[in-house]
Image 1 (cartoon, rainbow, N blue to C red):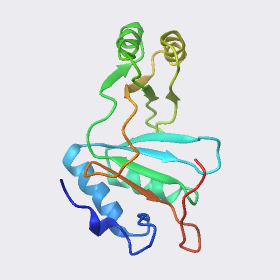
Image 2: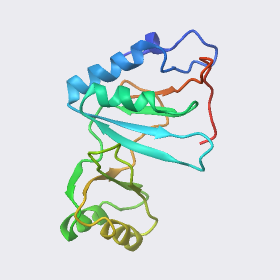
Image 3: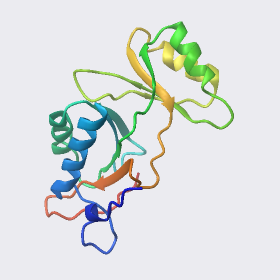
Length: 173
């Protein structure tokens, strides 16, 4: 396991902040190694608002960071996520629904090349998930298990967006 101690700033809470250029350098390295990374952006005080975005170019990632409001939680996934990909049709819908076994939490991210991939579909039942996917028929999607994001590791890392004064803190997500 790779020790990420060098990414942690000298702050008592141990959080990583975007202002530290090493976070962006790590994202660049992961994109170069993997071809793409997945970012989960959790917005503070928005009632659970979040975006999932795939990045294949570092410039797209840094442009997204520049537009984020303070206290946004930014979580990056090094390893490939949401492996079922394609245009939403009945075949993809059947495959996606078949992933819903036991307590597996399955999501679909509708891919949008003009802006960050935004539409996240997550339903409680197979029929609700099937209906939600049909509403996006013909669009590209990435589908799979909800990525494991609760703990930093060599393949998952989180940072926070600071405010204008350079301070960042955990928000209400």
